[in-house]
Length: 228
Picture 1 (cartoon, rainbow, N blue to C red):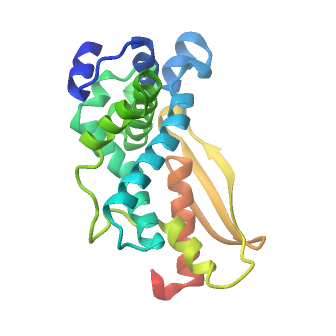
Picture 2 (cartoon, rainbow, N blue to C red):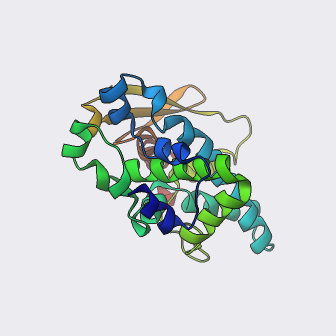
C-alpha cells in the first residue's frame, strides 16, 4: 500500500521507514508504543522549516518586483493549513495515515490539521532521504500549483497584526497558550495575544496555530477595526 503512495508522489524512498514515520500520527504512536517520539511530530518540525525556505526561495526568484511584505503574505498563504490539506487531498494522503482508534473514529483522516501536519512530515522525509531536490520536487508538484498572485486564499492575521503594530516603534507581541482541553481526536486550544504585556485578543481553535490566528484576528478587531 505504501508503494502506491510513493507512486502518487513520484518518489521512491531509499529508506522506506522515513515515509512510514511520516505517516504515523501521535495518537497511533501513543496507543501502540506509548511513545510520542515515534510519531511524525519531529518530522513535522523539520518539514515546516524546509517548506518555508523552499517556498520563500521560489517567491524571491519568481516575483522580483514584489516587496518583502507581499512576499511574506504570499508565503504564509502557501504554507497555511488549508493549502497543505489541499495538497494532501491531491494525493489521497489521509488514506495512508496511521491513526489511533479515537482519532480514526473522530474523522481524523479528513481533518485539515492532521493532513497539513502529515504533508510537512512527508516533505521532511523526502528531504532526509533525497535531499533538497526530493523535497522541492514534492513541493513543486503539490504546493506550488496555485500561487496566490493577486488574491490570497487565506488571511494571515498574525502577519497582518505584526505589520500593523510595527507602525510604531518598540512594540512587542507575544502569544500564550492558556488552556488545552478535549480528547486527542477533538482537541481545543485557547490562546491570548499580548501587546507590550497587555492582553489585546483571545482566540480558540482545533490547533495551536488556528487559535493564534483567531487571537490575532480578535486583536486586529480590537486595536485596528478599520482593517478587519
